[in-house]
Image (cartoon, rainbow, N blue to C red; front, side, top):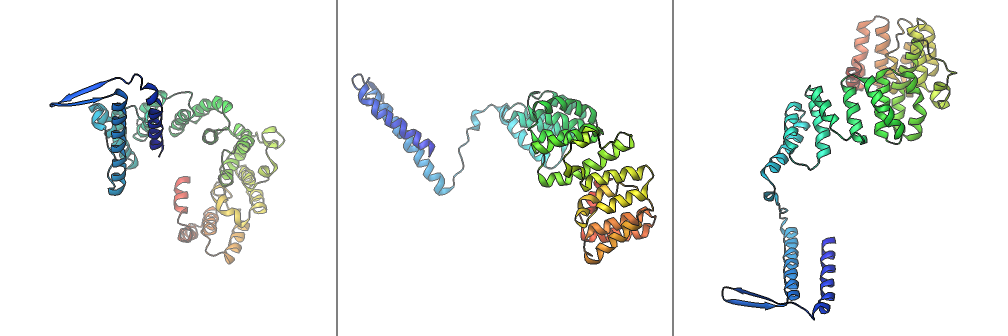
Length: 366
């Protein structure tokens, strides 16, 4: 419709300007196979325009009536560009099939065509990384626009995948200072700090993450159980955890009192040898609704044989919720801590019966 309106506008302007130019209309004579055509220049242009418009309208109607394919002018492109476009298609298919080596090869061929250049470069980086060629992936990433946030994400993400979290943190630090509103960049920044074990800086970034909404409400509820248990326990083991220091006191009260933060304190106590106090701290804060999210963090707490009270609590919950797979998984953890491997195996089978996704979570944690 926009094109049709544009053509009508141009046609109207031609009709308006035609009389103005009629004093000097010009003169055109065509002689074709003995046939002579005489017309003014303006008249000839109007006839040509009307013919083109009529052909376009006829094609538009026929295309919708008979569902004809779009016209392709690919024959006007060079052979090199056509091959590059075809290579791009093969590269995307290989990427989707996770055939990383072949995808990497096709992305190299697709560079001959400049369309979607940024996307091709980014996907080529990941294809090379997944193919096992980290050096090539880093070289491709270095060719991206360094001032672009998407490019920064790729560079930092590749560093994390290569296990160089400290370098990823150093790379992202100045970019986060300049652009705190970029949620994707912020989430990767938190992941880099977590992987690098820079606990104090990680806790200092929590108020910024909440204010800028790097994660939505549901994502933050889950992320707490990764962040606080690791950060609090890590600082405590190094003898650096102090609730009076700014990195902790500046946190919102809801965060400091969260179950996730208490799990970190319980883990620190268990690691220091005070497993009984760790279990008490855990039971005082843990509710049934917290178990699905807290389960992975609880498994990181080495309670040893100090799980009797926890085991009784889990069995109490199971009386009214005997189809809750997470409770069976927690029961399996308790049996493992007490050295009862057969009971642990049986409880784990029940857990998978009701919550099959626990198998994937266990594989990721291992």
